[in-house]
Length: 389
Image (tube, rainbow, N blue to C red; front, side, top):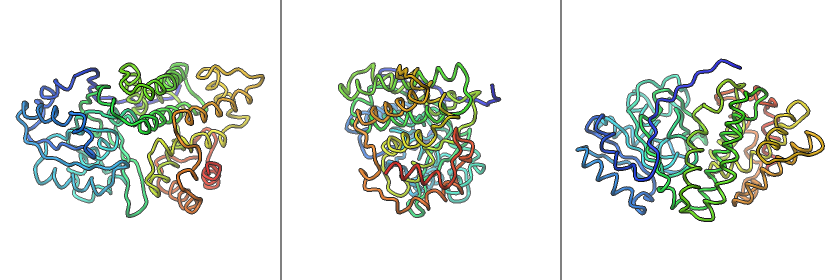
């Protein structure tokens, strides 16, 4: 087993109607609150009014930043940082999905940084003190409510990059599956793919452990079982609860403890696609993942893929290679069954920027792709992308 660090300071408050405890949680923070949210869906489902009532009960001064975009932009971060500095914000209350929470994390760090908050994305070593964050989750997907990272896009430079820092873990996260009932089928499915991809990034390494293999396989089976149920009946509480629980565990590091380090190849490639084409993250991952799997499958890696096929899908073919290939087919079929596209051309994407994407990954990704289960270089990135066309 490899050495590892695991730091999970976030207090998770999970279950029905726990929003009534928000005023108590906020009592331990200062008076000035920055409320961040997206396009207004929290108002449609009545969550905004509940949050405001809790803030009033807590006696807080509330400042708002709304309209945070999917694939959150550095422009929104800059606006939030300005509010934090001008109004002496004591705590950020992020109400929404991963995009809102990610944006809030960059804002939290930027509030105590003298330069442009994009500097922190380009170099996470500059992340220091941060404004505390409390989240109220409305979308099961990224796991940002329970990790120390975020992903921010810069439309001016066609970049989408991660930011990391132990001070970026939310202090408290409220997880009520009822607030995901209104999430569209497409976003539900995309969130499920994102969760599976987080799991694959930890699982598809050369050396795992018995415990974390089982955790990863349980995560994958949970998402495969409950996503169709949530799509069929959006108000199926058990389905939504299981997806929310799984997604929150997908990216906080617990699946990776003791395992070989992952390069997170699929995320590296999908971030480039989102940077250029502003596509939904999970949609891009649904297309890239099978292509990467086929690229990575060879005689050296076949046992890992065959294990995945046997333990997650119950596949048992005559040879490990046959089992592994069938597992990749089953993965692709599952993505299609929940409404995800299978080719980049379905999204109007061509090979125009593939070389630029590969170069950018080589220069800016947080981990060398040479450590992947099958090492990936510039040529390999382009090959994975071309095979996804």
